[in-house]
Each structure stands twice: as structure tokens, then as C-alpha cells.
Length: 273
Image (cartoon, rainbow, N blue to C red; front, side, top):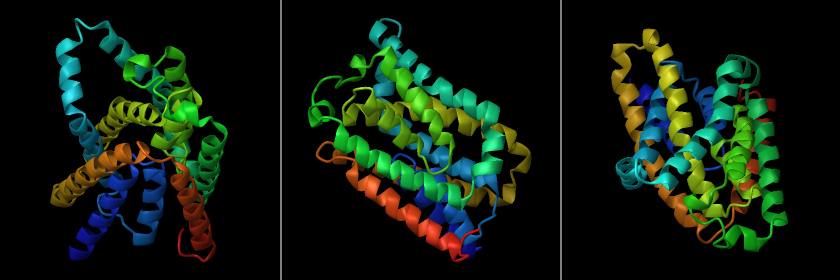
């Protein structure tokens, strides 16, 4: 039991830290579960720690969500914003619904995670180097009211790539936003809002489909994982918002490349399967 609790804590910390940072929570969990040989509750555990992450972002923006809920009928700008969120979520949601099982069967391996991390790292470095600093740091497109339909669609289409483990949902949506002309903060916050329906809907769908696999004897581990994931994800969101106010995403690019190379080495050495 103690060993299982330790593994739950480690994987919950991984989920909480990586879900909203542009370094791929799915990729890190694929590697983490392989290293720890973790099979308690199977896929249900990953669902519960994702629930924790979804709750964290909703609680972090709870004041905005309450304000939007009160004013949605009288404020066209709010209705427009949530239509943009829906538009940005549809491509990945439809692709995941149609091809999700095939993607998991073929691509959920440490090798794919490693290659995705490395390629994504180079993309971050290239985008940060090539896009004008004025565009990334200016006040243009600085609020959610400034997001255009074209920008939301670009983000949504790029986000489809996140179905590949190691790409990162937050990373792909942030890059999509930056390429579409958003500054770093707006691209990041729009990514957080996209997580609510997209990650929340996918998690709820998986939970309902996995209810038969739910073992009541493991509820303690499941709720422990969800709670830890939520607390850590909250801190990660808050840290990232403050970080991007003064820094670029270059450090995440380098991290991804190094992490990918380490995973490739570990796989070649037989430490990962």
C-alpha cells in the first residue's frame, strides 16, 4: 500500500506540473508509468488526476467564470468569446473522438514521446527566434476580446497535433496562438480556457466509459491523486502566468530537447518499454 501511495504521489505531481506547462503531461505520464511499472486502477487513475487538473484551472479562473455566467445574456463579447473557445476546441475533440483509440494503440510509446518532445522543442526555439519581439510583447491582441475567429481556428487546428503524446496540448495551442498573432500571455491564457471544455469533456467521456473498471477499494488512491494534481496544477498555472510576463518560452524549448534525448537514451538502455 505504501509503495502504491508513493507512486500515486509521484504521478500526480507529474500531471499537476506538466498539464499546463508546454512540455506534455501525456508524454511525461507515459514515461512515468513505464518507469514506475504502475498499474493500480489502470487508465482510471489517469482520468482522476486529469479531473484534478481541470478543477484547478476552473478554480483559478473562478471569478472570471462567475462574471461571464452572470453577464452572458447581456454581453455579446462574452458570448463571442465562448464561441471562439468552442471553435478552438472542435478540431481536436472531433479528431480525438474518431481516431483516439488508434492513436493510443500506435503512438503511446516512449520513443514517440521522445521524438515529439525534441521536435516541439526546436519549434519553440524557432518561433521565439523568428517572430518579432514587438508582436510577442505588445499590447496588440492583449485581451480575450481581441481574439479573432481566424486566430481561434488556427489555434484549434494546431492543437490537433497534441493528440500525439509528447507534443503537449498547452504547447501546441500556445504556439498556434503566437503564430496567429497573439502575445505570449494571451496565447497562454486562451490555452487555459480551451482546456476547460476540451480536457474537461474528454476526461468526463473517459470516466463514464470506465465506470465498470472503477474499484471502490482504490478510491482513496484515486482521490489522493486528484487532490494532489489539482493543488500542483494550480501552482503551475499561477507560476506560468507570472513567468511569461517577463520571459520567453525558450527555456521550455531547451527542456523538451534535453528530456527527449534522455528518454531516447533510457529506451535504448532498456530502462523504458
